[in-house]
Amino acid sequence: MRILITGGAGFLGSHLCERLLNEGNEVICLDNFFTGRKSNVAHLLPNSNFELMRHDVIDPFKVEVDQIYNLACPASPVHYQYNPIKTTKTSVMGAINCLGLAKRVNARVFQASTSEVYGDPDVHPQPESYWGHVNTIGIRSCYDEGKRCAETLFFDYHREHQVDIRVVRIFNTYGPRMLADDGRVVSNFIVQALQGQDITVYGEGQQTRSFCYVDDLIEGFVRLMNQEQVVGPMNIGNPNEFTILQLAQRVIELTGSQSKIVYRPMPQDDPKQRQPDIRQAREVLDWEPQVQLDAGLKATIDYFAQQL
Ligand code: NAD
Ligand code: UDP
Image 1 (cartoon, rainbow, N blue to C red):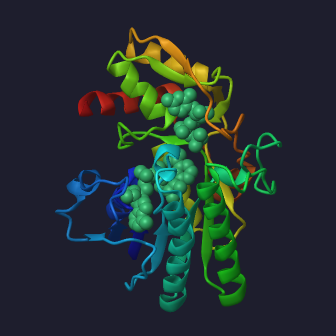
Image 2: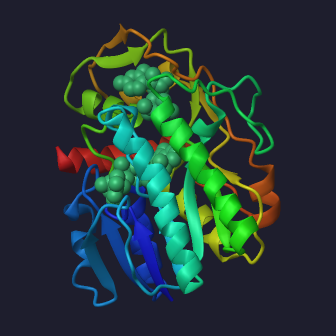
């Protein structure tokens, strides 16, 4: 198959490019390099089945493809809040452009949605049927509402034009090729620990997240994309939940670092708890995560140790 991946030079996108090329597909990677890097996909350039295209998803694009994975959007709060209007445009215009292309060339199209559609959830763990608890006007809203609107567009294109859609709600995922200055918690803590800097825990560190290793997530993506039914949005994530303080302690232990934990103010609207209900993924995809936190952290620590 010929497959377009928007945001393909980013953290998740580069792993997806690699996986789909390894399966013998042709891959077109489209990226504006805001948070992605050529170096993430440099090792794929010699492969004649791989093409790299500098382009912004808010502008229409025309390519003949069988499948589209729409991943373009900054994912770290630091980056998506840098230019919040652009973040919403990326999600909304990017979805419209991918869906328009999918309709024209009759391609199956996949949307990388997020657990952020649940906002600061008051249902725990979060099943797909939960409608969420999102502030429409806060500093995270550009991302949350952009992604919610993208989901709406996907289901309207499906109902109105029978576009063949797949929508995944991704929960916190980590691994090699995150940016060292990405601002997300796993990369921050590992880089701080390796450099002997203070580990910056926001608030008291009692907020929770459930961390999924990148290889497990990509396996879930490919299974969802290639099963034949259009199902509702599907949670993909690792249901093992940790407080941020526990994560800081694991990182210190696994790196053997002398770093001290310091406490910083909690950012506005930071969700207090997050854990995916993955019953749907288990039933429909026969999928569940294989890599647990310590093993995934070790692989990520090895990557950053080489990078730094
Ligand atoms: P990332 O920032 O590493 O990757 C995003 C990629 O999109 C980058 O290569 C960036 O340059 C590109 N991009 C951004 N705006 C663009 C635009 N306007 N036009 C073209 N390219 C653009 O982040 P990631 O973690 O790889 O996330 C990939 C996708 O998965 C995003 O849509 C994100 O919202 C979603 N997601 C990720 C997580 C996670 O934990 N990693 C969780 C939920 C959702
Ligand atoms: N966080 C932290 N220290 C950091 C970076 C993040 O304590 O240096 C916290 C952040 O406040 C949040 C959690 O870690 O509660 C996860 O943050 P991240 O930005 O990785 O993802 P998201 O909030 O989007 O789930």
